[in-house]
Amino acid sequence: MLRTIIFKIVLGIYFVLWAPFLLIGLVSKKITTKLVLADAAGVLVLARVICGIRYKIFYPPTEENGVPAAPNENVRLDGKAIIAAKHMSMMEVAILANNVQRPFFILKRELLWIPIYGWAFWRMGLQPVNRTRGATNMNKLAAAVATKIMNGQTLIIFPEGTRTKPGHPIPLKRGLLFLAQQLKLPIIPVGTDTGLYWPKRGKMTPGVAGVWFEPVLPSTASLEDIYNAINKHSA
Image (cartoon, rainbow, N blue to C red; front, side, top):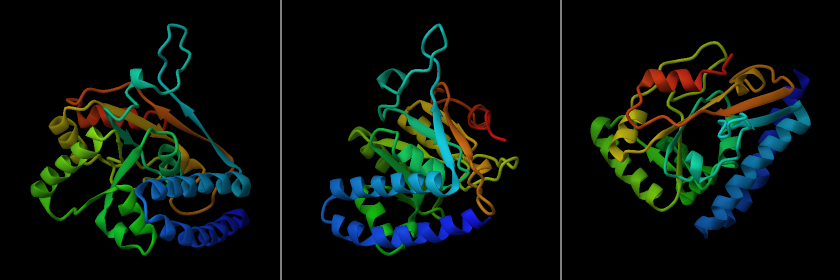
């Protein structure tokens, strides 16, 4: 537990030290994006150094011998698909942000109100959503997401809507299906077990967290199909 406490203290200091750089970086979307991604990469370094938590990414086999291939346009990690990922901790956010081409996330608009960090999220083009506006909000969201994807960005969405505990999966939100069907984009499910090592609350545990990119699903996939795919490797 001591390492967990040390990590959280150091992480808080780390975020404070990064804030001035993010503030300066607001002059440019490109600079802000690089700074935020570097910030996220630093979080992974701290988790590894202080808590002994590393990670490994697994991609779907694309060869007859079952050897996984690195992401490329053939497995649709080029922005022309929606990445639907399981959400267990801050860790997979940082991992995906640094391993997906030109990523952007959908997040609660309230997060953009956080001083400096929220401004940086807005500047780099993360997509806010007002969860109280119903269908009208979803139509506007689909249009905004379409524009970003046409500009070469890749949408990463957490269909559970919140972080989950190991062994306690929750139902997926239907917004993912709405976006996939409206934009006619396939879905790449991503599973993870980061919650075993970096839980939502409690002690952090040394080990190697896995992130699994599953085979692409069509835009017409059901919530059950997506649910099964992203929970395939969860504890």
